[in-house]
Image: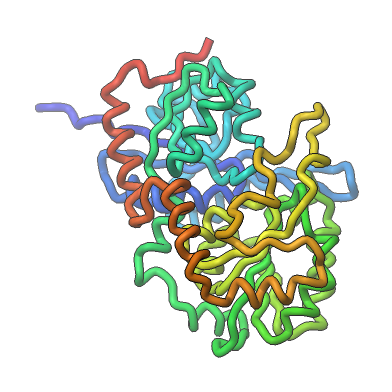
Amino acid sequence: MEGKKRRIKVLFKIGFLYHKSAFDPLIKIFEKDNTYDVRLSCKEEKVKYLWIFIHSLEKQMLERFKKEGHNVTLSESGFDVVFTGDTVTNPGKLGRTIICFVNHGSGIKNIMYRNLARDKETKYMIFVEGDYREKKLHEKNCLGISRVFKVGMPKLDPLFNSDKFNRESILRSLHLDCKKKTVLYAPTYKPTSIFALKDSLFRYTKCYNLLIKLHPYSWFGRYAPHRHHRIFENMVRNFSHAVLLPKEAYSILPYLYVADTMITEASSTMFEFLATGKTGIIYNLDSKKLRHSDGSPILDEDNRTFLKDAFVHFSEPEKIGDAIENALTIDTAREKRKELMRKELFYALDGNASLRVKKIVEKLLEDNDARNNPA
């Protein structure tokens, strides 16, 4: 009797919960295929309290994944394919596997290139959103023995499946007015506009719905102070038009969908909002002053000029109201510029990026040289 064919073991190494939104469409299509035995892990999610104590949330995350219907694992070794949203701290522990790097979102930050440059001996199969990112990776000379594949952004696939989201249902669930325009504020944790914009943001959005989606690091106290979320927890109590989205809401996609415009400074969400075709707003920072501890720049692009003429830029917090009004006004020249930038940044926006990744992975499984060989 012929033996049962071994299923291909696939791990989604979800370092932090918010990385999962980059993987959700991929997890779904791999779990649907009985060829694959799919597991999820989550080892990096931790909370810091009293300034010094760090507590792992791995157990809670795995319980959450199980409740969602996924299979989970504590061990990350012995898999044929490992998906990761960042470079891997200790690739040797993964064994001889195909490491698929689907970035959780780098936008205009330098971190992806910095991390890859330090890890040139690890072989990553890097899936990027388009020409812009591929060009940057080569310019930075950070690839080492890794390979690059242009596929689009799997994370965004649900935005292009028309029945996935319902605007009125989402706004009603947040107790917001469906007749009003919606402004989404999505700051990053570093460098952040939180302290500069917190007062003006509430003052000049009273005739809109205001959604506030903080970076997950702004909640857990490890890489950003707890003050980030406490500011908004206090302020939303006094403004009925504003909602601070909870830290458990790891995916920004529903809020990108309902937002008429979005404000950020350096978050990768600027790429994602551009993909929707709507006009975003960028709060200008002095990029030259923004440095890592080793002196290297935090941002790879000057946010004062990035997406110029495609998004609205402003420098003074008191001008936030004008910026919102401008972004909500149709401008023919700006629409053309947005379309050009969409083509530069994204290989395709058709809801099929995940399928392209899966097809490439299936070919890589037949390529013995695609596996990382840890020393």
